[in-house]
Amino acid sequence: MYRSNLIRALAATFAATLVAAAGSISASPASASNFGSTGTTGITGTTNGVWLTTNASFVVGRISLTSAYSNAVTTVMNGQYDPTDLTVSIASPTFCDSSIDTCIYDSDYGDNGLNGWNACDGPTSGSHPNMRCTTQWVRINQQYNPPANRIVCHEVAHSVGLRHTSEQASCVKRTADGGNSSTLSAHDQGHLNATY
Amino acid sequence: MRPTEKANEPRRARGAATVAALLLGVSISLSACAEPRSESDPTAGSAEAQNSDERFWQTFRISGDEVEPYVSLDSMAQTADATVLARFGKVGKVRTITAEGNDTVHYVSVELTVTRELAGKGGLPSVVPLEFMVIPGRGQSIDEVTGKLSASLPKDDMILFLRAKKGTGETGLYRVVNSRGLWASTSRDTLDTPLAEEPVKDEAQYKSDLAKVSTIPELANLVDNLR
Image 1 (cartoon, chains in turn purple, orange):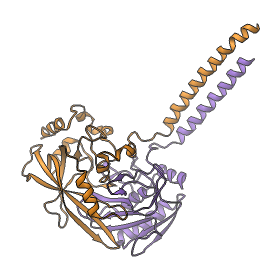
Image 2 (cartoon, helix red, strand yellow; image 1 turned 90 degrees about the vertical axis):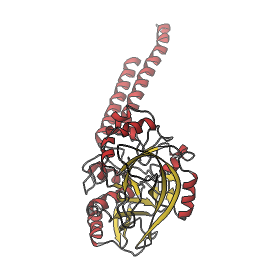
Image 3 (cartoon, one colour; image 1 turned 60 degrees about the horizontal axis):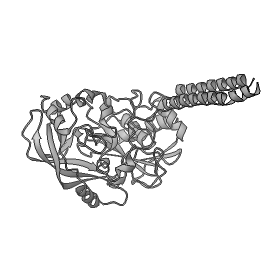
Image 4 (cartoon, chains in turn cyan, red; image 1 turned 135 degrees about the horizontal axis):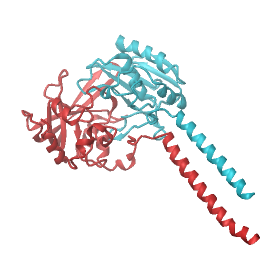
């Protein structure tokens, strides 16, 4: 009696474990590791890398952007990020300040090999992979005039915690790696919805 | 019966423990599959990095979108403006670009002392100004950054795939083609591309070449023959 009850209980536990694990696997996207802060502590302190924004209320600043990139911010933020659990608002101040989560600049920054990049201006809180940065600066390099919607989608992704991915449908796939999408993938959106 | 039942208790316990251990093993292995953290987690090892060359290299690891595609060593050697075995000399000039909205970007030039040119290209001077973009931390001056860079420059030979910069006011300056364009022996790996977030050993297009060599001088010889 004892043995048969024990075996039944263990079998049920085993089955439940398998079902739970299978559910977890099927819910897990193709590249589940492309989310989380990576900000590195170089000589300059914690500036480079991917960061999470502070909370779901996400204010993006267009800092003296040219019309092509300014329009792209509107299109991408309303079309890609606002439909997620982030609540997006767009400001157009002259200078970046602490009321803005991600400030976006465009300029000819020279031949540095980068279409655009993201950096944390601080302050930060928490620890990896959930380190949050209060004010981040996205730069778009007009030396190369990268496609507007794509580069805005890509760099803003780094300011809300999305890392580079191998997923072709995602704007967070590197140009250097063959990326050309201007939209977040369902997988990217899933990460944002799970976090914010 | 009783003694027998008693004798069976430890056996049952052992059986239950075995099954539980199996369940635990299956559970751990499945949960590892369910949420695979990156094999090359960019944050991995960052704690110990603070006392090593990692801190120097992390300064230049930018999370951004690179212009030039990642290609094999063969293609890099063919398309780069110059390929060299070289080492850092000293930190040179700082160039600052100021744009609208208190936007400032700094470039620090590091003098590269060329040990030898590779892959059949020539014509470089013996000292090449290589520019890196740096983003000072909040409240940090660029002079403070350059002072720290000078004090922590790696000293060993590296292999660099260089691009002559083409922007306004950049004549005579160089950059690496992309974050896979600088190869060095680092605390992260014996053969590393330390400007890249992810270690190079995970990249399929370099595996066959890396299987043939184990040191930077050996890699330099391999690259030298890619002509």
